[in-house]
Image (cartoon, rainbow over all chains, first blue to last red; front, side):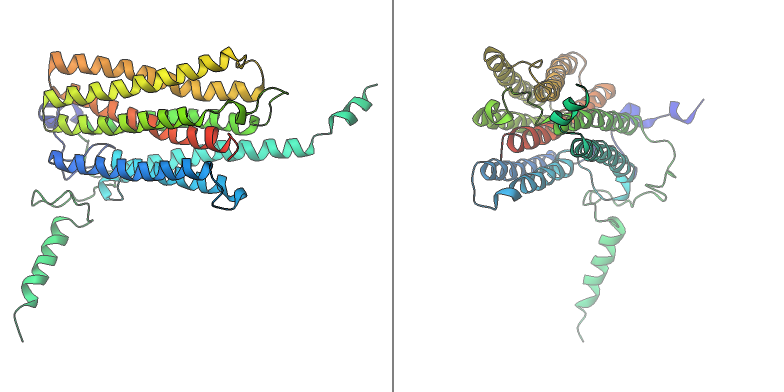
Length: 137
Length: 231
């Protein structure tokens, strides 16, 4: 019999406050704790979303800086979601969750930034179309 | 010399002992975290934790898949082949409505999980239903958008930009649709089977999935609609 077969949590469906925790899950708390987190998450998200839509449609800041500002707002809002909706913390009970998240973020950045970088280079080094036509008369 | 200092320092020591990492959620019991926590030294975790963590790994791989679609859109954003540009196809008021619907559904989803933790069947079902209705509103708005675009002759085969646009936004919409079906299934299961452990585990996974969809949507409305739309 493996250790996994004996699982007291399987019968109580409760988490032990002294163990590791999965994302979005926490040891027993009052409903108020969850609702308060949800309210914080919703409040911050509304502020950040309204700011993003406002900035996109106005010229209160230097125009070339708007995409950067929008990306900063988006990353901030993703952070708000991770903290208040998914309950990712920096505590030792969350080490596994944070490490998995860090690896996921690494792969996402490699894929997105790597693709954009490589394709921009290709685009700039590509022969203009009229020259290419001249090569094959 | 007064004796005011001593009780205060004892209080501080007690707080550090009970909650050494200031997690804020160890205050109910008088136990400290297990030795070796976070270093894989606490023995096999409970099923609830294994299920949630496994689903977290799946979600991260799902987000990696989305990142490939984001990369495709970022690379092809100017590949319009003489067709419509992003600025011509973005309808910002509708995007704002979609964003509001998805954010509110994420909020009510979390309220449903609060009710689940309190083992309150009525409010769990109510908030799951509201979550589903917001999700349905989102899917309908997106379907309306795609149908309108198709009516103007803007289809995925028109240009590379449109292929990646419909691919990315459509993939997210497909996720929300499938999530909605999962939600309906969960409502039926909660009603029939009650809060059995495996049902609660499925509710945890569903919550994670729904919040992850909202996180992906943040990327979509920022990169595709706001920045792509010419901001």
